Length: 471
Image (cartoon, rainbow, N blue to C red; front, side, top):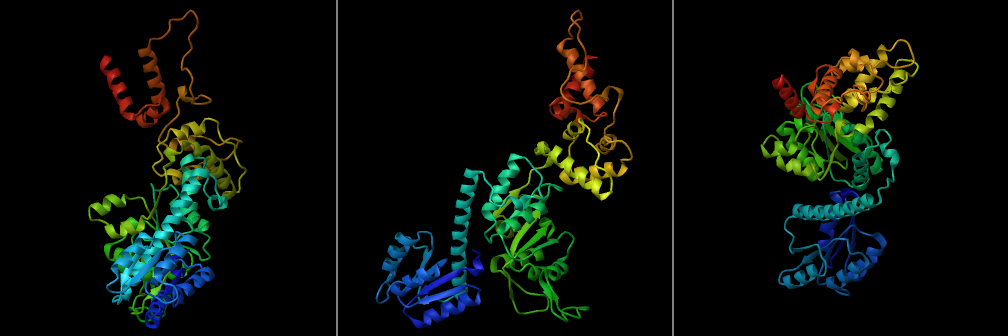
């Protein structure tokens, strides 16, 4: 269920109330079913299976409280909002105790407020369903739509948990915020959200970085003919192209504040204005946003609107960096080598056994994107032989090989031999030897050497300082 194609059942014995409610909700894009008393309401409930119910309390044949009891026995989750006349607040309170979601009093002054109440009720049901689905996904650990994630190569447990989370929240209409370092694959995850949602519309991606307010409005909302100088014909915006589908807004943290206000209105009201038009257009596109910035920190410091941040992060997905999913490096390496070889019309070279260990020691600030660039560069330079040279990778990582680094594999092994008659090195001597070997293999890069040794860079710094002092 998406909010805008939900079915609302309205029950009231006053024809004026029924017609005004039906006019309002139909104009907002909802499906509306009406009934004049509780008995007709029950019949309509069985026939239409509504997502939300508004019901009066005092009606002939079957009153609102009796109807409420009957509905809650059939479906405890459907929200029921009571329409209460003046002077019968006690009945409204009794209805709340029976499970009513909320109540409003007659006469209903603000129809806009009524639509807001309806949307909140529908959103709460949707979130409850998503929470239940997520609980089941996490308990089972099984994926129903594995093909939705086929473009993401991973064997990482955290990524698998993310896939389960996506399957749970994808069918809804609430916004999704994807965070993570640059190069982690945020757009691939956004596409998987769209695929798992089963939406019939298109996936439309927009990078909002560098767009000023007018460019943002024109790109997303489009314009009418004559909206500005050069607007010789009407232009449909990206949001219209994403009708029934997903609009992906990348680099959302770079959006200027005037554009943030317009995006907030789109999320709250599900409507927008093309440039030069006074007529609001409705939208049912799912909004998925991504950023490598700390939006929470930005919102707290006033650099990003808090109300927009809270709207965007209804569902939040954080993609781990490549250094947090080192077990994926062999899989990604094999995939990218094959892709690069096909791209350059070359035979697929074999991968040196020790290359994965070298790559695992590298601090990939560009994450998967950086690894892919390394592989394509290495395959492009590959000329002869069956095995891919590791020299290109070492150069990209800022390391170099040395005589002592020419070993078959930088895995755990003693860098010295101790014969039975030899003196066993002291721990201090062994430590110094291991540090020297790690620094040689890392080409003097302390960060890489620390990874070889399985310690922090700060720890290696202290050891180097201690060794220098003891000399």
